[in-house]
Structures are given as C-alpha cells and as structure tokens.
Length: 165
Image (tube, rainbow, N blue to C red; front, top):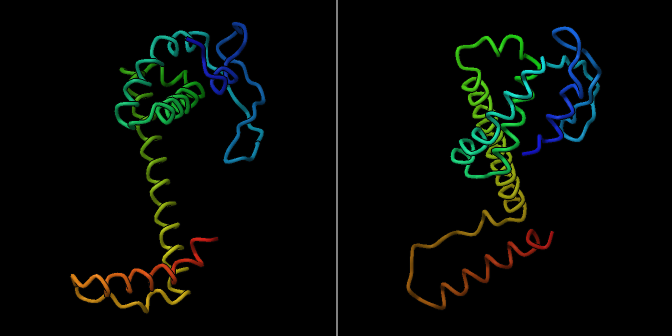
C-alpha cells in the first residue's frame, strides 16, 4: 500500500533527530493555497498509519457508501492526527480517535453537500417563480387525457427558458 500524497507530504522523508521537526507546508483549502507551519510527528506515526489506514478506509466506506469519500475523510483524519501526534499517541485508543475524526469529517462533508443541494433547489424554485410558473394552478386529479396534455404543455412552456440555461 502506498501512502497518499496528501499525507506523505506532511511526514518527514527521513527520521529526524529529536521528538519533532518543524517545516513550512502548503495546504490546499477550496482551491486556495495557503502557507502554514506544520509540525511533523515522530517516526512511529508512519507505522501507525500503515497499520490502520486500510482498515479505517473500509470502515468509512461502509458508513459513507463511497470509497473515494472514505479515503478523503481518513486522509484528513490522519493529517489531523499527525499534527497532534504527541498527544494522540497517548490516548487509550488512538485508532478510535482517528476513526471518530474521519466519521465527523464525512458527516460534515455530507451536511455541506446537502446544504448546497438545498440552496440549488431553492435557487431553481426562485427562477421558476420569476418566470411565472408559480401561477400555474394544479387542478384536482383528472383522468381526462386532454386536460392532462394541456397542463403538461403549459408546464413545459413555462420551464423551457430555465432548462436551456
């Protein structure tokens, strides 16, 4: 198994003298590259990563239903663990801590996605209202094919300008 580049870039390339090494690293947050001070963990972190990465990705895949999303969440969790390794390694269950951070990351990403979808839906409704679609009155259910066809044609005409955008 190869270590993901996002995590590998936060680890020292060779064992460093002393408990930790500081270096300037770059993080990519939403398309923006920002400089930040990164403290690399002790060398035992890499062994911890290799021992638990696959297991955590499998667990998160079951939770998220998406292997790529699971990998992203686990990588983010390991990055957070790497920056706090001196503290995290002393926990009773450091793997549990990384798992919880990954699950939280997945939950946050899911909520963000749901909020974005709701905003897009509301924007779409607003566009339809601006075109006057809200004035189309839905009549009580009917089995008259002519009335159904007319209602469908009216709706298609009202929605057509939005659909072509």
